[in-house]
Amino acid sequence: MADAKVIPFDDDRSRARRRPGGRADGEAAAVRALPGPQQGPQEPEGSQEGPAPGEAGEAVGADTGGVGEAAAGAGPVAGGWERRLAGGLAFLRRRITGDYEVDEFGYDEELTDQVLMSLLRPLYEKYFRVEVKGVENIPAEGGALIVANHSGTLPLDGLMMQVAVHDHHPAGRHLRLLAADLVFVLPVVNELARKAGHTLACAEDAERLLRSGEIVGVMPEGFKGIGKPFGERYKLQRFGRGGFVSTALRAGVPIVPCSIVGAEEIYPMIGNAKTLARVLGFPYFPLTPTFPWLGPLGALPLPTKWTIQFGEPIPTDSYAPEAAEDPMLMFNLTDQVREQIQHTLYKLLVQRRSVFF
Image 1 (cartoon, rainbow, N blue to C red):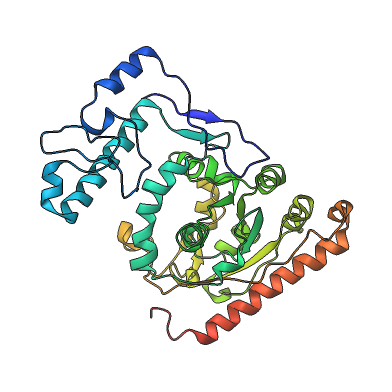
Image 2 (image 1 turned 60 degrees about the vertical axis):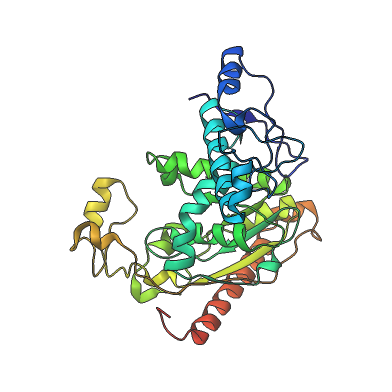
């Protein structure tokens, strides 16, 4: 499989969208030899006027963008099915030939949109039945830092927040999450995290993404939040030293508080096997009512009902550049964000009818 084209990250634009240039003669000949919709110029994926193969595998005319005679005679259902098939084949061809883009952080937007979000969406829509509120508080353009509570033993809350922004924001924004070091040393998980747009939780990477106009997500509680006992659910842990506030001040972007209800109960953590955690190199080893007692079955999360609420943004562009070095200001803003998230959590818990409904 050919390597993807790496697009240098451009701080003056939110995302590089240039198509890669030339291709080796052998690769180009192989692509031209492919049948059907690969012959002509490609249409954007998901377009209602995209190419679709005809009855005898003939290429669709590029000037009309219509379907073949057989598809046209079969009605809109057949045409839609053939367009999806053509789009899927075109996607596979691009993956095989390396005709796709990643940025220098490893983010693969096409793979995220077409595959990763599709895999997470059933969990989001059918299993956790996530309700999203206040997504319009995320700016339609420019950078913003989303700060959320963290819980659930496994970091599914970050993934569900990513789907919420991707599927519900009116401007179709993408969320780039800051993840712990552990994520990037685990095999397979490391590659998937990079492809999905996540990057190491360091100030340099976060600031660069924000300055380029990206939406960045951070969960300052870290392992203290995700691995806390069930008895401390929905009680926010310490938000570190306010590094996320300093990053937002330097980039001059708003901070959007985010409160997530429902994640605390997916794996009720009633114990922590600390010795085993040290042996495995994990920050904790959870003991729940089902894990490890039921084996792999015990690793299934409980189907709780989730609510994700994005709060009113807190602007930072009115502060002078040197404000990022003011510890008192950072403390006050950190406390303001934390209190807003905690207050919203309590409000959502009062409104919740049931953990599961």
